Amino acid sequence: MDKMRKVPEMAVRDPKTGETVVVYGAGAMKDKPLNLRKGIDLTKPIAEQVSKIKRKSRS
Image 1 (cartoon, rainbow, N blue to C red):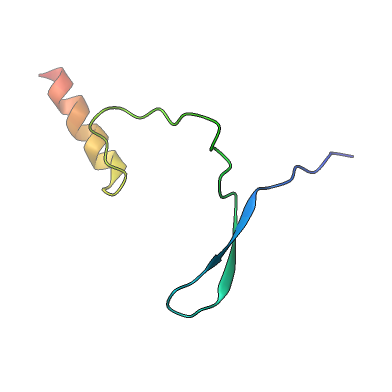
Image 2 (cartoon, rainbow, N blue to C red):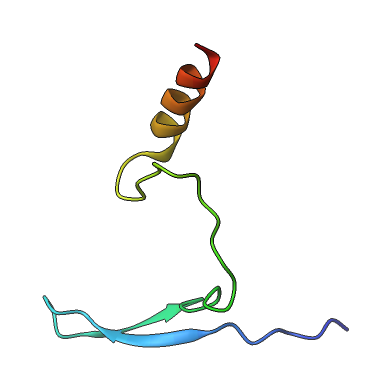
């Protein structure tokens, strides 16, 4: 039988409803670096940003 891994979880209160929500996997990568290309903004669509970078590098 496979061993089950403990999934990190965090309880967060929703400010709009006041309800407590469990967020599974929160903090799972806190000890690992997240390597991103310079110029990538995570608040914008990533695919569009990468395609623009690739187009510039071809020129």
